[in-house]
Image (cartoon, rainbow, N blue to C red; front, side, top):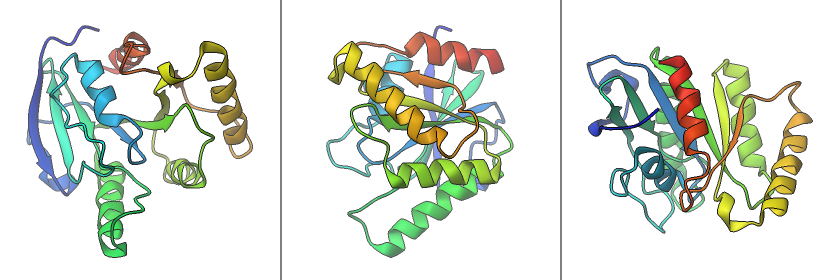
Length: 195
C-alpha cells in the first residue's frame, strides 16, 4: 500500500466523539517513549504528522488521521505512565478502554514494544487484558535499528518466549525502525488485507 494522503481528522477523549465519517480504524498504542509517533510518521511518510517528543506521555487524546480517504490511523495515549498522578493515570486508562472496547470500526490494535528490552510486566498485563476482552491485536517491535541484526532477532525471540508462557499462540509480530523504514511495507500490507 502507498499512502498518498494522511489528514488529521480530529481528537477526542471518548469513543462517542470520534469523527462522524465511519471508516475502518487501525489503532496504535504502547508505553511512553516506545517510539509510537515516530513509527506513525514513518508509516505515513510525513515527519510532522504525529507530534514526537523526548518527554514521555505527549499524547493525551485519541487522534484520528484519515489515510487515502479510506481508513483511519488512530494514535492512542500510552499506557503505564509513571510520572503522572494516579487520577490522571486512571482517566487515561478509562479513555483507552472506552475506545478499544466500544469502537465498532477498530479492526486491529497494534501494540508497540521496544525491541531493545525484555517485555515488561505492564506490557504483559496490558496484552493479557486484550485477550480477556477479545480485542484483535498485533505486536510491533520498535527501534529495530538500535540493535545489530542477530541481537535484534535474539531479543524478539526472547520476548516471544516470555509471551508464549501465557498464550497458546501469538498474533502477527512485526519488527520496525522509524530510522530505516524497516517494517513499513509489511505493516501497511497487513492493514491493506483488511481494507
